[in-house]
Image (tube, rainbow, N blue to C red; front, side, top):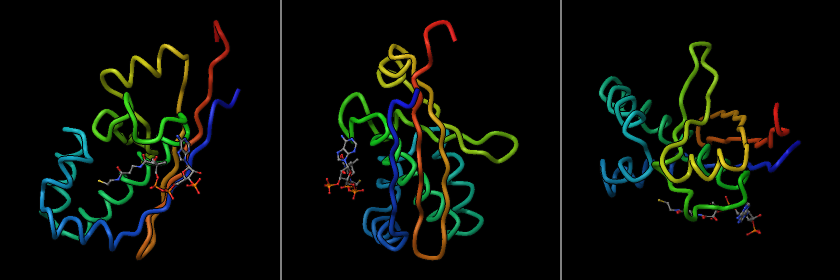
Length: 134
Ligand SMILES: CC(C)(COP(=O)(O)OP(=O)(O)OC[C@H]1O[C@@H](n2cnc3c(N)ncnc32)[C@H](O)[C@@H]1OP(=O)(O)O)[C@@H](O)C(=O)NCCC(=O)NCCS
């Protein structure tokens, strides 16, 4: 059954401004270690790709935080919620630490979709509660 849904729209210009103001510290606050590696690689090739990567991750994490009903409150933290990518290109939620324990204890699973256009990134997340024994 559906446990929760979450959506978020993120202004890419706001993310760009935060990166200009705070530099890497902003990315380090929002991204997990694995995401930071990808962000550094994309930014090195073309800074705008780094901005867009960060914006889609930012919106995905906010959408997930709404789908689980916690918002950005413990155990939900930016860095404990990672957005991975399957070989097909599909984004997937990968959790760490206390957030993973909280999520697994409830028998939850997440589905994520992200998109971006010139000035906006948006995400939609559905969290499902698995039936016992499923
Ligand atoms: C929900 C949350 C994750 C995002 O809020 P936001 O980005 O300020 O605002 P958004 O417009 O994207 O979302 C707000 C809506 O989320 C929904 N929402 C609020 N708390 C929620 C919760 N616990 N679960 C699900 N949805 C929630 C509400 O519908 C709210 O709209 P309302 O205020 O009109 O009722 C917020 O609770 C939060 O914790 N934000 C932290 C953001 C932050 O740390 N920013 C710093 C950037 S480094």
